[in-house]
Image (tube, rainbow, N blue to C red; front, side, top):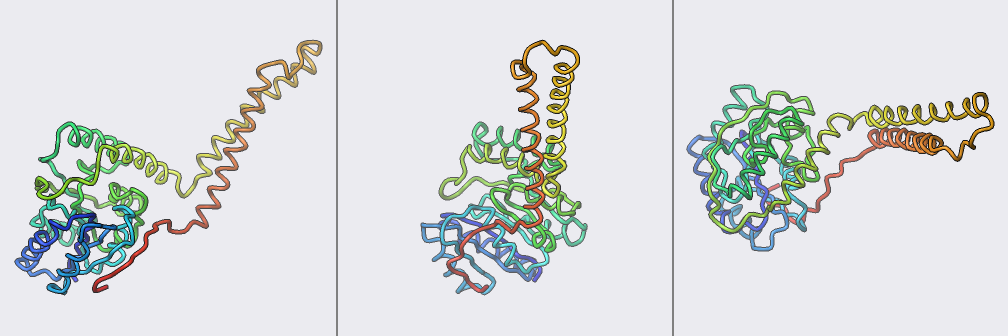
Length: 315
């Protein structure tokens, strides 16, 4: 198996047959051994029936159906788990990604030694205010925070070496940051390719402006996890010790001042420094305990990618 094409979808029945025929034409013209894995993320429009029809006509079509909508990250995770190809291609089902890009992306993985090739929709056919400007801001922040120099983190068209998709865990809303997850897992050969973006032909987008808000929150999460995910004590423990030292320093000063310097002065509890010291030591202790508990959780954590599959085809 040379290529596995993983396609998550939600209510894209109108575009599935056309997308399938387009992919098959590209695969056959390049003589690829391939599989197409459709992941139906809880569609309600008959997408699964269309996938079953396609699988009956084409033995290379496989399908996974979720019991309900779990999200794109969970769909990709299920597709990665099932993929058998040497190179795994991800793309959206709305016909905005061009299958003609696949052969070159495959070559960049197999011949140039790249482990991840991310698409870059340099020319977009989306609303400038609703998508283009927020997307540029989002991608700039992602580059600065993650250190991965990609222009378009949100592009659904990506190519991965087989080892990459088997080594990473895509959960929550982290599908935007698969290249970052790959980098954190030790796969450093990450490149990008300018790809053709096409206007949506059927239906409407399933994502609104909230995806950028969620994207920024996920970016903070992945930055924190990449820095301290395996060593939370290094952050919380250090802050806790610092706060405790500050509080203990104030307490020591108050004690010395009351016992030796000004024994007839105000009571310690009447001085604001007392409450600063008390608060600092309590917060410091809590932060230290948070780091300690975090270390325990890291060592005992389990995969939190959760979804329920109701049907499969050819898997």
